[in-house]
Image (cartoon, rainbow, N blue to C red):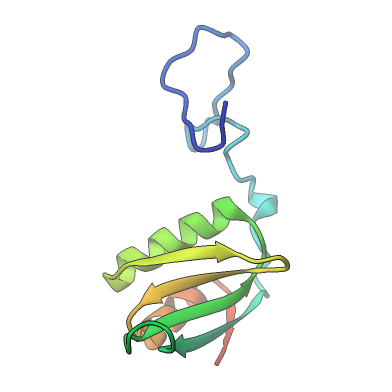
Length: 117
């Protein structure tokens, strides 16, 4: 099964679903894999190369795709704008469209993350 696919129906008795999130256990993020509460991220505004439009960039997240995807979705909903996340070689970043620094800072600090910038 590919990483992007999700199980719809299976007759295989060995297929296990997580009782918490109802996803396959291989796709579920265990709570011990979520980054520590004391994680420090760096926030900045970028305009260069974006036709003058500003983008809020939150950088230095650990490379955990499921965690980043969930956090990006939550930030996009709370900010009411689009966005994405990208994985680098060492760390990852989240981009939120528009200048949403105050709102993003408040949401991240509520989650226990320290924000610089």
